[in-house]
Structures are given as structure tokens and as C-alpha cells.
Amino acid sequence: MTLSSIPLATSDLQISGGIRRSSTQICAPVMAETVDQMLLLMRKAKELGADLVEVRVDFLKNFSPRQDLEILIKQSPLPTLITYRPIWEGGQYDGDESQRQNALRLAVELEADYVDVELKVAHDFYNAIQGKKPEKVKIIVSSHNYQSTPSVEEIGDLVAKILSTGADIVKVATTALDIIDSARVFQVLVHSQVPMIGIVMGEKGFISRILSAKFGGFLTFGSIEAGVVSAPGQPSVTDLLDLYNFRQIGPDTKVHGVIGNPIGHSKSPHLYNGAFKSVNFNGIYLPLLVDNVANFLNTYSSPDFVGYSYTIPHKEAGFNCCDEIDPIAKEIGAISCMIRRPDGKLKGYNVDYLGAIAAIEEGLRASNGASNGSGSPLAGKLFVVMGAGGAGKALAFGGKEKGARVVVANRSYDKAKQLASKVGGEAISLAELENFHPEEGMILANTTSVGMKPKIENTPLPKHALKHYSLVFDAIYTPKLTRLLREAEESGATIVYGTEMFINQAFVQFEKFTGLPAPKQLIRDTLARNT
Image (tube, rainbow, N blue to C red):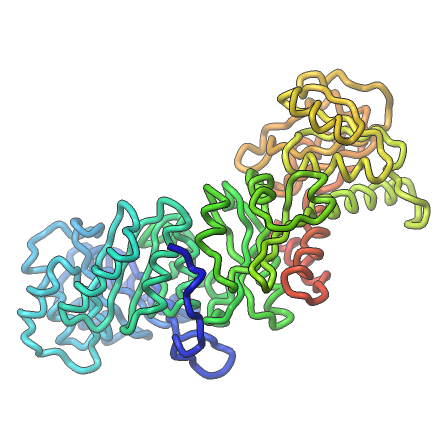
């Protein structure tokens, strides 16, 4: 099932006025052991910008339903959704079921704005209230699948089953085993004729929480504190509003993202979402934890999924999925940027090469005091590239184009030899690199992931070997100052941060994504704040 045929007309959604493009609300779960703590969290949720709070009374110690619910409902500064989740549906409550349902009926009586009732007991619940429900109270009938995400047909059947109970609002929460699972929920969400909450839990379902605003979800959940979540993969209210510009996402918002695995470390969403907002571009940029690139592209094939950055380990897989490839990217054999053209064709570019070489040249010019007009400072230099993957290829071809003498060092000598032969260079294994110094003043570029968060104490080359280099560049940008760069600086080399490559290629990608000039200073300032 793909997203190629989904109609994304504005008529699919009730749009509020102003710049808010979607009616999807942000609901902040409130989990605490006492009523007073809950009231504090409710006030915090309001300050942060949430629209309503989910009051998880199953977290309360010594819960006294009539007394506590009255206080929580009447004193909440935001509309309330009362949830008393039992252990059999992933909650905390492990007591008598009739007492639990009595508390939920009480919440209806006390006019909570919303009350969550699990599908398994919804018929019993409706029978018990016998139609005595205040008009303002809406019942959310929910189903949670902690194992997987069923087919579109099965989700559709589930929605029909929930509606047959008399639900005002449908809630379906599934679990992502792959990023493509969210597409099935989007498919149902966008065609739903009734208010529906569609969430795909887990890190691989993260996009469902943001794009619910595009596909017409009734609400999404955002935590009050980062990391203190009521379900896996939940973003914070602050990230929804400030990082992902949630209020500005609508049915016609263009989707971009960074495709990688792992992807949690990426700073790209900070850069592009802020830059998009600064020029009023109707786009969103997401971290995309992808296992299989071809499956992802085939699934999200609608014209609104328009642009991707590629990172480790998917640069070569991305290359193989392109309909058209820029000549330099073709030579390198890897892409770092992909654009879906208006005709649906996917075109690949390698912007790593542009970003990294420009950063190294700037570093050399600064250390030599040379001006921009004197040709490439890389010309004639011995340029050692560690790693022969996508970024390694980009650096090797970039060095060759600038007239450098390229040496490729890789764990697998065969892979190093393969790349070196393409750029007319030399190949050595990474093990040999430690004692490799045919001359002084060499240039070193690390494109391996050795030293990246969380293993920041690792380095691809011992300190004693660094004294033979005049400049060292590390493509890693988390952390900004890797152990390799710190020891290179201590050894007297000029160092160039991976962030510089990242910034230079971000300028190019922004222009490809939007067709607009990049807000360069804003992108630099954003990256400085987030490293």
C-alpha cells in the first residue's frame, strides 16, 4: 500500500484561521503520583502551548475517584481527556474492572471534555451510561496494538468496529516495525469521515506523530518534559511547536527529511525547519529512520514527499533508487540529496563533495593566508581519505578534481583499492595508515563513523601519527570536537569540523528543496546553538 494516490486537498481538513494550517490538537499526557503534582504539570502544559491534557489517573497513588476527578477536571487550565488505562491495555491500573469503569462514568458525569474507553469494554461502558452523557463530553474509544501495525483493510475494519460502539472519536495506536507502517495509518486517517487519532508508536513510527497534522488527525501527543513519555516515540510539546512548526503543517505541506540509520543524532531538522519557517516555505523536515530505501520511496510516493538528505548507511542505496543522477554523483557512485521532480522522477545529487571540499579549502586558505583567487590550495597535496563508503568516495573524487594526490585508507583493502583506482590514487589498509608518512604536511579526511556519539572516546588514528598532517578534517559532527580533531589540534594541525561540511551542503540542499536562496546566517546560527 502506498501513499501515491491519497488526495490531499485542503477540503480533507477543517482549517482554522490565521497561519495555523491544521486543526490537529496537541495533547500533553499528565502522569504523576499526586493530584497536586498533576495540577502543576497541567499549568506547565498550558505554558508550553498544549491544547489539552490527558490525565492519566492510573498513575495516581491512593486515587479517590470522586474527590480527585472533581479537582482535576474543574481546576485544569486546559480541556481534559481522562484516561484510566488498565494493565491489559498497556497502562498502570491492575485492580477491579468495575471500579475502573465506575471512575470513567464519574468522569463523564463531571463533564470532562473527553473520556478514553478501551474498545474491549466499550459496549459494556455505553450500556452502563444508558445514553446519559452530557453533550459536551466526547467519548474516545481506543485500541492499542503493541506488537505491530496491521494492513490497511484490518485497520479499516477496526475503525468500523470502534464506530459501531457509538464512539465520538476513534483512536487507533499501533506499533511500527518499519517506517513504512505509518503509511497504512495515514491511508485510513486521511479518508476517515469521523474524528480520528492515528498514532504509530516507537521510533520507527515517529513521523506519524508529526504528520498527523497533514493527514487530518484529531490530535497528537506531546510530552511535557523531553523523554518523560506515555508511549514510545513521543516528541515533546516544545519540539512539536518549535522544532517541527506543528501549527503550520497542513494538507499541502511538502515533506522532506534525512534518511539514515541511526538517525537520532541528526541536527538536520533543526536547520531546515527553522530555515523553511524564516522564508515562509510550506515544508517540514523529519528524521527518517529507514531500513530499506527502496521500500520507503515506493511507499511514500505521493507528490508531496519531495526531498531527502541521505546519510550513513544509505547513500549508495539512494543512488540505486534514482531515475536520474547528477554527473558528479554518478562518478562518485553515491548520493547525499534526492529531489522528486514534478513528473515524479527522483534525481540524485552529491552535495557532500561540494560541502566537504569547500570546508577543507577554506581551512587551508585560512592557515596559509592565501586568497580565493590562487587556485585550489589542495592542488598537489597528498590527501589521505579514511573510509571508502559514500562520503569517502565524495572526498576522494573531490580531491582528485582539485588536483590533490589521493590516498584511500579503508578497513577493507579491496574496497580502498577499488576507489583509489577510480581516482588515480593509492590504496592502503587502515592498519597501515598509522605508520604511513611519505612526506610531511599531508591532509587527512576521516569519513568513517569512528568517534561518533555515543562512542566519543574512540578515534580512527592514534595521536602519534597525526604530527605528519598540516590539516585534519572529520566528517563527524556529533560531537563537533571529536577525539581525532582534539588530538590533531594538540599535534599542531589545522582542524576543520564536520559542521563546516554540513553547513556548506545545507546551503545547497535548501536551495534544491525550496528554489529559494538559503538564509545562510540563520543556518549557521542554528547549527551553533545545536552543537
